[in-house]
Image 1 (tube, rainbow, N blue to C red):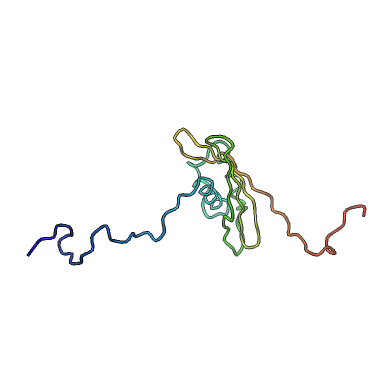
Image 2: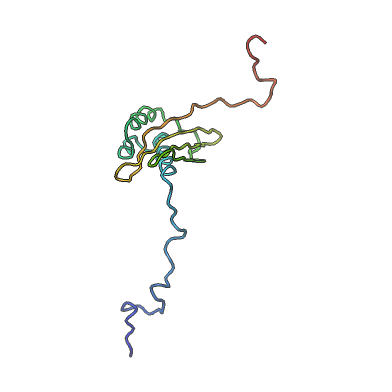
Length: 151
């Protein structure tokens, strides 16, 4: 009886290790820093995570801005879980990304802007965050739109 040294003892099938299919169903996609931060900021500003979750990921005034905004959970929506709809970033200088994201929860859409800075350790940190003010729903019928004063 010959001994097959390519398979572990007790294994009877003929598959070789390199033919075993990968356990991952899809290749893991690396997120750009602004996408990753948009998701984290949304989690804090919707009340899903506490503010201190961002402690090591903020610099300067950003943590204070989050601590001021978070208690009101400005991105929380009733009935619908908020999600990042779109996120765009621009690099005005090396090591700096200025980003904006639209956050959707049901029919409500909010804007969020933030600035990321890359430190000497090459880690990205949030340096500023701002939220757009919610606008009231627009009316589709011109007859229900109030006129300007003096008309």
